[in-house]
Length: 491
Image (cartoon, rainbow, N blue to C red; front, side):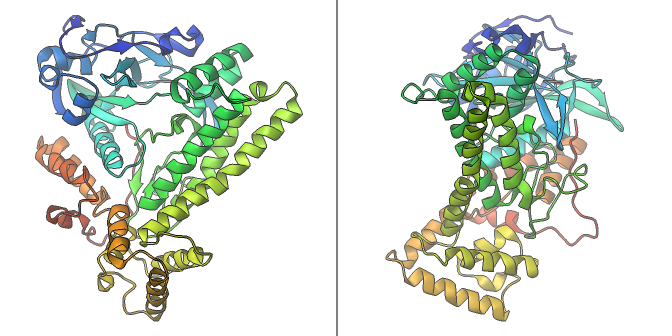
């Protein structure tokens, strides 16, 4: 083991605003030292945007930061406390295998959390070993960067480093640590924790901190805490609509996995849908389909209601009035989500303006896709390039009738057909991180030590709307299988 030391000249510029909150919100501790860190992948573009020196990060002094053997100047490692409803059941949680090193201040004055995931036990480990294995950390790297490429708000991955130590799961697996970058790690569960075990003043402190960090334009509003609730609702309405528009299934939408910033977080049992079916579930632990693709908007509303409950003491001195303010705000979510979703669906079909019949046109297409088990992404891709013969819908009477209605709808708008196609190109990705491609990359990396498959995959995923020739092969479907694809929370 190497001794912990200060690392210089890598560009770290850390602040610790979260560490200045009440001490009950977190526990200060250092990462557990590891035996032999080795850099597996570094996100050069993200590092540069953070103001970091890419070359220095790849040196020994740079790599030790990514496992916690070395701490950059200004780092104050801590594990955050939070709670959450997990599959509907409330429980005490917290960073059981992650530590916040601090907040990187970029050359443009932006603030981002820098967190090590898999860095060892904390007081919130709940019997776990605090470690992570290589496969799931690379999986989070792939999916989070794919989400970023798709234009979906997300935490991002800066680096994955192996520890040189084995982690025992069902077998011995290579240990690894992911460096995660986030606008913040504030969650609905953070507010639930303070609401349950803190004071009203603690809650006000957390809310004020959140407003200052994520919603600084609060000075001119009458009720700052109602404003906070409304802004979180708006961001989640945008986020969930974006998930639905690309067929993303989070898999574990517990309240501790809903961020206040509106970013997607935690890529354990997530996956992208191939065949369109609102009942699609990939997570091995979601046996009742609580977090199925079609349920995600409703679950988001449920989670936001839990967030609103935590804010009741701040919304109004009168409990009844506070409840009414919260209920009115939450009731807006469904309409906000629907507006975002239908606007996105119009764009996927090349529609610029609004007509009353648009929703039935969209639902008609989705109904056919479900009936004929059409691939979600490739159906819209085929429509984009007028290659409907490539879809499972082609040749059916229903599709011929729908296609005629769609073309008539496009003819009624002022924009020319080439503008509609460009809108569709910008709204329908050439590829998504297909589940079989993700598994292919992970198997090559973990079992064979071959990271070239993953790096090529990441390259094409970085610009999914480019519709370049090299992306075509990645849009092909997996071979038929009698076994449904399953994902796992995996540590």
